[in-house]
Image 1 (cartoon, rainbow, N blue to C red):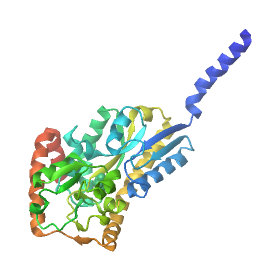
Image 2 (image 1 turned 30 degrees about the vertical axis):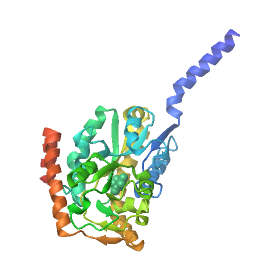
Image 3 (image 1 turned 90 degrees about the vertical axis):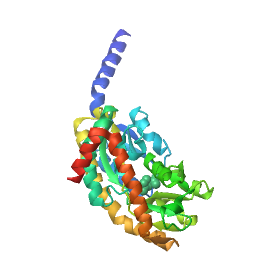
Image 4 (image 1 turned 60 degrees about the horizontal axis):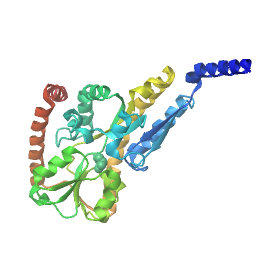
Length: 324
Ligand code: PCA
């Protein structure tokens, strides 16, 4: 009897010692956007590469469309360890820290090149904040440029007064306030529903999200003003990352770097295709009148000044690095 117990104890001790080396890790990855979205497709490619390059040691299961956690809850889920890895829209969290909202200020960075520059200028500060919260940034990818979708024609900001304005982050709510619209926060996964019920009729987003939500069924006008390019970040819990062996960590970082390059490229390449789909489905696509653009530029100027105040010295350093 004693021998049996001793043998079992020895075996389980061996198992415990051996476990970290051979163990397969299974991670859940909540994301907020649909399977067909280019960010989600990029994430699936990333997960497949990680599987391959770790020899199957790290399996990432992607839960898209806010099915595991709603888009705005994913950051907290990764922070709290309910999910090991996740995708977030960083500007969704600018109420926590102004730094998170720098990519969503109208007319600060309006092209892919400038957005990339702004990301390089703000990456360290963003990573440091997330690190303090126990999270590591794996990669970031920009959404296509943000334009205005509206059920009725818009010629100037005055036409936006009283609109039921869908917001997806604090900055888009702030724009609504500044133009006299009524902001309602709606995550992308619920946009189609919110339009169908009439809860919202106007919003700013990319043609990518316009396409995902088939918004042309309710909304007929798209003003391609290219006001900013918000970013999605793929973040991992530092604790989960530290639980990987060295070679898996390296494989994960390598796949992340590849996904970042690929994501920015696909975002830019697909943008014109998305806009084509708006037209094909009967939407009027317009660059926006000079008055509308001038009005929005004023909104942007106010928001850049507010942001600089809120983000303090760190914010000024980011703006200086960006403008250099
Ligand atoms: N689509 C997301 C965020 C930015 C974008 O282009 C959305 O509308 O929720």
